Image 1: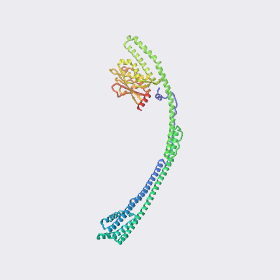
Image 2: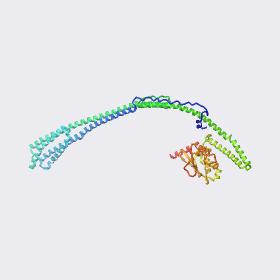
Image 3: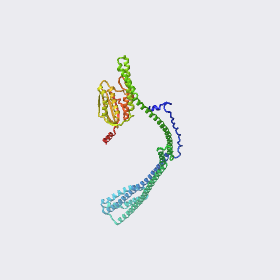
Image 4: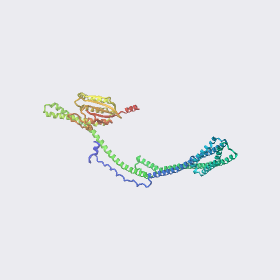
Amino acid sequence: MTRPELAERAPGQGDHREVAEPAPAPPDRRPARATRWPLRRIINVGVGALVLFSLASVVVGTLALTNLADTRARVVERIDPAIQQALRLESALVNQETGVRDYSLGARRDLLTPYTDGLAVERDATRRLEPVVREFPAVARALADVTERSDDWRTSYAEPAIDVVDATGRPTVTTTNVDAGRVYFEAVRSSLDDLRAALDDARGSATAALDRSSTTLDVVCVVIAAGFALIVVALAVGLRRAAIRPVSRLAAEVRTVADGDFAHRVEQSGPAEVRNLGADVNQMRERILHELSAVRAAHHELDLRTQDLERSNTELEQFAYVASHDLQEPLRKIASFCQLLQRRYAGRLDEQADQYIAFAVDGAKRMQELINDLLAFSRVGRIPRDAEEVSCTTVLEQATKNLATMIEQSGATIEADELPTVRAEVPLLTAVFQNLVSNAIKFRREDPPHIVVEAHRDGDFWEFSFTDNGIGVEPDYAERIFVIFQRLHGKAEYPGTGIGLAMSRKIIEYHGGRIWLDTEHRPGARFRFTLPVLAEQNDEETDTDG
């Protein structure tokens, strides 16, 4: 009796047992939504504070950097170039004074070149200084004073002295002229000293401002770094207290439940999400308790049915024993007496009586074959034998020896590659080879049967194929042919009980493989089946790959 048959027993059949109904599902005890801040809000507030501080830091840092850049630009781009131009201006005025004095002494025109060149440099330096010193009033006043006094020197002394030399063509140096020129140029020198002092004061002020800007920037950077560190620490501590610690507690509670203590109630604390998660775990725990009680009830029912199944299997074994012993004797007697009647009264009765006797003899023989085949089918895997490593070539040779008469009468030829070694029960594997070869011979065409046996490795399995040139099998019947007692042809066309392929499938599956019909092969039929590769062969392949 199979397990589905036990499950489908009608009331009143078999044992009457009461099975406890599982308890109803527990009510939903999920608490009201927590009023604490949710974790998302906590994180959003922390991130928002960090973003605001970062923005403020960027603004303040930008202002400090801008101020530092401005003060540095004032020193580097305006004051320092102004000092350089002031030096050019002073050098140009000195060259002018030297040129006028040399020209007055030598009366040669080439001695006037320093004067003319200095005048051009003075004008260029003044032109460059004027826009730079506008933001420095003291420097601008000093520059204007230098310009005024240099112009006064030229108009009052330099140009008249040059005109006199040009008119007379000889030196015109007198003590009076020299003293007058010295007085005028000393005024120019004094104004140049004032310009230099004003520039030095401006540079000192700008340098001090630059130092203050640099110090301010340093302070801002330190404050930003300290503030950022404090915010990060505050966020870490806050997240630890608000999220990580409650989640850790919840994880410990959940591990307690996961270890099998389903009666342990999970405590809820922390932000709303963690509390809700704890409530969900409690609800799941209660459902597991409910389902566990249902599973236990189902296991109890399964144990009862397993006992029924074991008893049914015992009865089936007893039936198989009776079928192999007690039923065989009556069948042998029936067959023997029918054959005796056939031999003794053949031809002495009418033709119809001879036909009836032949039917009786054939029926008794077929009944014996069916019982023997059914008994062999039921014993597959029920009486375990020690599996051993065997060469499939040897198994095929034994199968062909068992079918020697059939092969000789049909003129069949068998072509086989070198077949692998597998672990199997030799009698059962021989039965598979014998069934496949006998089917190939039985379902043949007019041509002599030709059977090809091949094997190749497919991962962890050896895949075997038996190919013949017979009548083949339609793809629609690819599964039906493996069902016990299913026949596609009448008994008159092809003899047999219809159990060979069903037994072959049971044997192959018992050895951990599978068998099927290759529906793409034409003409003829090709059956394929697999058997596991030996562990030693797997090790050898691994070593080869290495």
